[in-house]
Image (cartoon, rainbow, N blue to C red; front, side, top):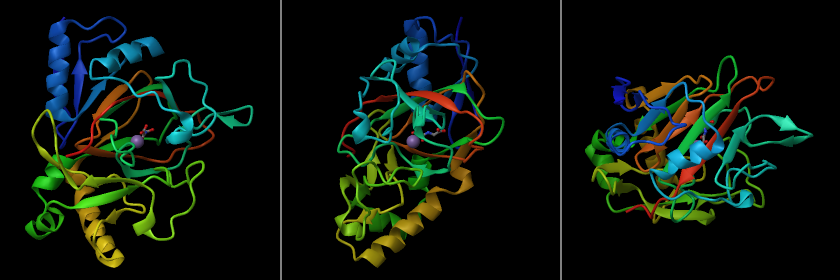
Length: 285
Ligand code: OGA
Ligand code: MN
């Protein structure tokens, strides 16, 4: 069986057909998938019926996996992990405790864990249970966003660094152990180049993390806020984005080095259960 790569027609994303992720990947398929990923940033595999071991085996084709201590991540909570590499994204509460992270609220545009020095290069999300509506996940192409940036904005971020706040989650909650940021210049987190060069494709991409509590180093706070607002207004334009409507058995892998993503809210009375892995990355440069 040979795989088919079907681009979404939007600024990023492609569906991969003709592969069963519960079986080992052939060398040719693996090669084709890695190439499609470099070309399309987000890959969708539908109708997969896999267990956590299969998810881990698939994810390892892209690199080494993160094993995250719950306290240091988005995943704070009481999730029961079948394997330390598996992170649960869910609104389900069992015995008074959330089984996973992110609940049912909107998750604002972000890239995963940019508040650490070496953020994960990729995240893989596999859907086990999905609500009847809502909870769609959107992605935006940060190569395109950078390429189309007006010259004055490009010049303003050339060689600049920003702080990526670690105190808040993408659903706007304070992380366990964090205290509210009163001055963005003092926010905890990691400092990264605002434009990064993708180590595989060589493409330059805007790297912003998330808007909340972000700060452009060396700027006055109001100037930093104005610059960041202008950059976010640009990169979240619909022309750079693609939205995925989930079905059970969908698996998505996205590249955190050149994409941002967000999730719509959904009805908290319905269940949404996803299993996720994260692939280690390096310092943006
Ligand atoms: C994530 C995330 C979006 C979703 O897992 O990092 O942002 O659709 N999830 O649940
Ligand atoms: Mn995320």
